[in-house]
Image (cartoon, rainbow, N blue to C red):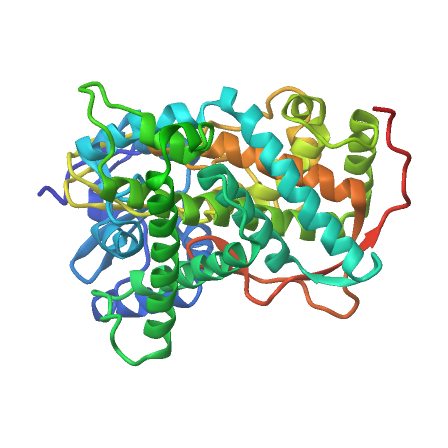
Length: 476
């Protein structure tokens, strides 16, 4: 392993060795740095870029790491050299406890096979069928919320969006409606998300049988989700073909075949369903959570988005074909995901084949970290980067480098469900603005972001939802 390869800085034409790249001074084998990362990963990453620039090298115990904060570096690494990287082994160990060998965990040929087989189920043309399920779930959840307290109450927004998005996932995946089960499953995914990030900083996961509160909570959450998935799979497989749903994601997975004619094995079906439960609901709920906060904090933007929704929909429910006619609403969601990306830190990558990255020779074994939270808030790419300005995403494509906005990742491992997530977020947001105006609760502090696997407020976010004046429905 060549740790002193000479490189050329693409900006200054100066040569450097790998050990000459800027970075924090290592003491005590890097343990103080790892403690700082654990306490506040996002703040730590921001400080790295502020102090050391776009490429920051560190030594942590026996590992050599490189943080990349320039969008071009990120694009080259994740897109051009994707086959030179695999996900960090410890991250895979942690996620495999929940997801087995599903799409989020698999590498190499196993991942390529799963991605190839699953991609048709998430093609944009399938969104029409999913949109009707999303609208029905949103209608029931939002109408219940605004009628429960005469339309002027304070709501726990995390509970509202978690329950709604999990209901959507139950329906899209299993054609099943079970509100109580969906709410319990949403709570379980939150427990597993928090546990996953915590264990990333441990060399090994503690046994789940230990009588610790964290271990018991994780064990219960895993048991609940696995039991739910297994029960749904057993119910579907027991149905005669003519009685089984044909248009949900499970039907798609049961029907799909690889190039050699092979189908997903039962264990693979289980693992893919577990991935969809966690990733398919939690990221969407998180994006809507931060969007609702920003709408409550910027009433002018909320009023403009609501006016656009009213003009386009004329008091009817939205449909998939309406989405291109709601550009400002879409811009508020994009700007929300810029400021608060649901996945604020991508899983660390390991270099398995050395490559050159704009003058830096990355040797085999290097760990590469990418933090969208920092890149999204860089003033070089986004003027007034901490302000909520949806206008950034209106009209022609904004002038920013590729890789400067990446809420769904980048490269071959970009989120397979991004079209479904965008469809769901836009439909739910439109229906919420049809029914309510959002307001901050007087006296409550601003929510502070806290990184689990997704980016959540450190304390529960509560907002006041005030019912809008009734508008006549169009003639049918």
